[in-house]
Image (cartoon, rainbow, N blue to C red; front, side, top):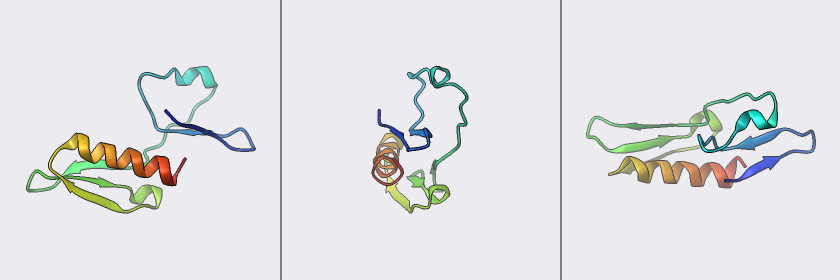
Length: 77
C-alpha cells in the first residue's frame, strides 16, 4: 500500500479493507474510478473522475482492477 502525505498533512491512498482508516482520524473516502463490464462482458477501468483515461478492455475483472490501481499509484499518489 502506498500512502501519500502532502505538506498540509492531507493523506491519499488507495482504499483497502485491510487498513484501519479510523487510526488516521477523521477520514473522507471518495471514489477515484469505476471498474465495470461492457455489453460483451469485457472489463473497463474508467478513471475519468480522477482526470484519467478509460483503460481496457480486459477479459477479467482482476486485470482491470490491477490496471486501475497501477494508474492511480503512478498518477494520483
